[in-house]
Amino acid sequence: MVQPKENKMKMNSKRLISLLLVLAMTVALLCVGVYADPVDETATPAAENASTTETQPNAEAPTAEEPAAVEPATPAPATPATPATPDPRTDGQKVLTIIGDSIAAGYGLSENVNSLTNQFTLHGATIVDGSYPQILRDEGGFDVVHKDARESYTAINFLRMIDEEYDNELAQPKNYYLRWLSECTFFLPKIFGSPTNDTENLKANIKNDIATADAIVINLGNNDTFTMALLDFFLRSEYYVYGMAAQPALSALKGKLNAATSLNDLIQMFGGTYADIFTKEEEYLQLFKKNMDRMIGVIRKMNPTAEIYYMGMYNTFEYAQPEDDAIRDFLYQAGVDLCNKLEVYAKQECAYRNDIHYVDVLGTQVWKSDTIYSPSYWLRFLVHCHPDYDGHRFMAEQLMNAMSLDTDANCPLANFIDLIPTGWYHEPIDYVLRRGIMDGMTDHMFGPEVTLTRAMVVTMLYAMDGKPSVNSLSPFGDVQATDWFVNPVVWAADNGIVSGYDDGSFRPSNAVTREELATMLRSYAGYRKMDVTANGDLSKFADQAAVSGWANESVSWAVGHGIINGRDGNRIAPKGTATRAEAATMFTRLCQNVL
Image (cartoon, rainbow, N blue to C red):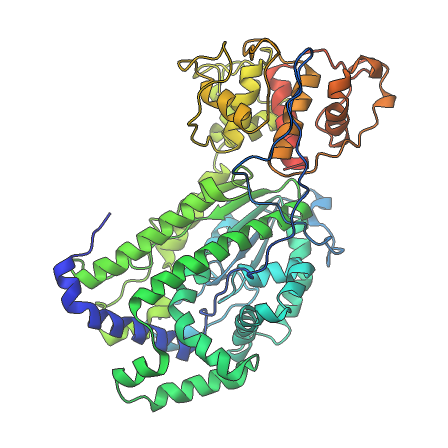
């Protein structure tokens, strides 16, 4: 990590304020790709709050408790509308949908990059030559690529298009400011040449593009955080003066900037210091996380099976010059910190962190430019903070690596000599291996026919939850601090996902029965605040009476959600065991059908 040089910073603080204000003014005057906004400040609708605790035969049934720290409640999204166009997959085609801002839109890609007119080049629905969507279209093996990215758009814009309830929340008086910013974002591309019906067309198509996709890429974050923090301290004053009248506000803002004759005029006009920017950045970062959680939840409801890829951020000031300079180092470090925070969110904090793939693009190259002390750097900042052609190539390659699109050798099953690529279990085992839910029993043996044990189940659930830290001691006499499964068992017990037998044991090496497994999975779903309604019809199974009373609701729930199906002879086989390959199938269905 680069650390600011304190002695230079003291001398150059005024210079930093001046630079940031110049950047802010330039962005505001050019009015493109800048009005970013995260989520509204209202609480998202709470998901179902029920939870259940595993109860073993002859064991006490403990009182279910709400975990002290759980995943954020998954929003209840609006029912998706009928797709605007037919599903292209009816022809067996492979479909990719890209949701993003100016980066995915291909903003700034021009042979004449230093031309100021390049900062007004908007692309609408066009896939721009040299952009990573174009590379994925031509080299990624997709038959159809929907590029639903727009310059200046943010998570809030796309969420408004796919969640009517969210759009209604923004109409509440306490959310007027956020709605005003969003309306500005919708409005600005039209000023500079996008079709007047572009937003309407996008809204009509994006639901279909999401619902029909085999893979979805989300490329949002920088506008929602740093850009909004940079502009907020004077945009808010414009809003208070002009309210929802976006166009007069923008015109008046330009007039006030033109009337300013000195830096003191600007400071008095807008107020604030560079410290305010980073305070605001943290505020908008938290709102962005909430917004993204809700958007991913809506997307998952609209399309339960598509692979979702979250594109990480790159550092806008990675290649800024001069390198050995306190202000440049300060800006560079601020960029690194933001990238790190967004990565932590995607990998550890996101409510859907086990359902998305994080794509690291931190090494993305941006357009080279003059020193930060040159006016041309800030005049052309809107282009020079975007990836160049090599940067887009790098992003495309990182995405293709994450998607394993290059060769079959990247299939995780190829690492294990006891797995057959054409086996019935290929898809579910591929699913759990890529997400780190399961691993091999050795480096080269997966053990698909090995009987699943209780320790294995909690270890898989623990991996799905991101392997959180554990500070408690084992409550079970047969689980020791040196056991490989101690953290998963303690975590599961602490959160009410499992309970021991009445003799105080956990019996980690015991083969788990199908009804025990159903109970554990339902308990985990309750911990995640998902649907735990017991809605499966057990009467269709010949051995319904064999289901233990304590497991009846859990088995009904697992059947109702398609997690457990019958076996030969129309049996549910509640006392039967499961293999590791069968467990991969059940966990895949849990992720796709419930979480």
